[in-house]
Image (cartoon, rainbow, N blue to C red; front, side, top):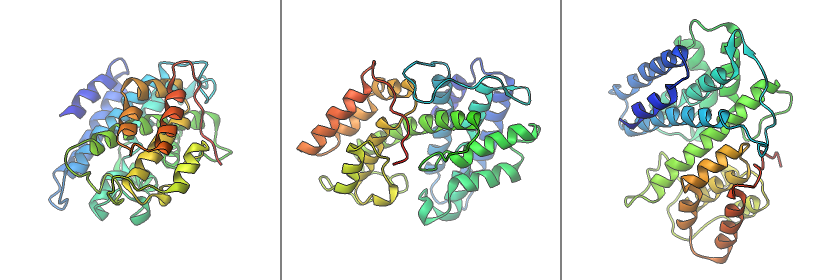
Length: 293
């Protein structure tokens, strides 16, 4: 399975603690693959692979600090004897741990139609024993990043090290969601409605207010999505919100934004968006960073 390969790459050089937690994560998630009450196990497999790829992306981001980053300088030190990179990697691994129970209960990944998967993830981390043996301060750090990773904006007042780690995980998550959506939108078969949050299929329709928000460098709103093109627009808007130059490099090198652009209707507004996206991805361009308005 591809997630095993990704897990091995993510472990490389990261130490025994991370390897142990990857094994714990796999043991936990595999229960849902074996659960007879889950009608379709493919979304479970997708989230296992996604979690390990986010871990891999986060590792790449923290190993490539750049003056073009929008998140500033990484905080020094760590917590309770664990290095800051290790804390980030653990948070990245567990960021979507609530997705498995969410899908088992509701057969959807749509938070508004089920339950906030980040809050559910914190409940899982507190009740499952996945974080057993870690100091209280470390458990609190990981849970804070998990609860913040899917917020539309990171609120003010968050501790600097938690904020920086959350920015890394949010970027790593977005880059891999782009990969998942590219694979679904360019596939010959119709996209899985669980993955695309049940938006309607249409080759040309899109929501103008969502398009305008993205062209103004604002964060797209999931609740504004009606069509598959809206989902593509929202994801492309992340290019202007990414916090790290390394994240932009991954998007460019993997042709993720380009493939989404090629899957949009060939009309003037989309061509204008394409020019804006490609300019943001140029190697010398700084990361824009998240904006709250």
